[in-house]
Length: 165
Image 1 (spheres, rainbow, N blue to C red):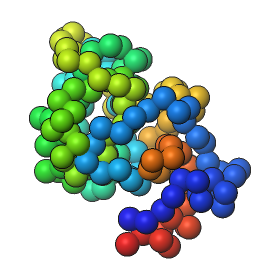
Image 2: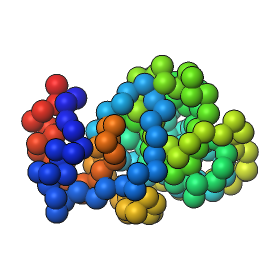
Image 3: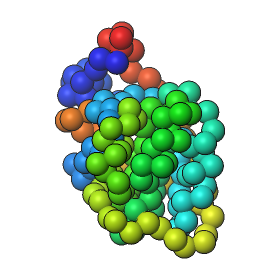
Image 4: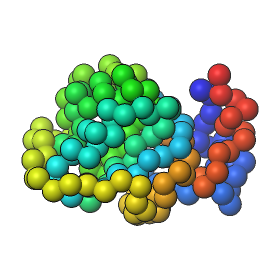
């Protein structure tokens, strides 16, 4: 896929929401685009595991864990995402196994790394709206990410679709 978030911001200045520059890339795919599925976790990542084991169809899982300092995603979940055709994962939290996650052809953007995985037993919620990074995420929004940043739009941006290859 061929697009640049900077060009999309220029073409659609009143339609895009730009995340604060807090997120780093830890996946093998450096540029991702797709409709989002929202996941809010309150500890255990079981809800996210189940989601990534389902068909992704090029979508992006956006995960809010309230920036808790434990790893939500590692190489095992990235393998599930790859096998089930997820374009990427964006996490308001932390990841681990980054030597391996950078080799898997799925986008992964997070606040940073943490070697300790999350263990709390609470269930998460799917398809809910939440805010982090200065924007609100709604189920079905479209996310575009590259080296310059991460942006959201309520609808697909035609300029990006025209340049996808």
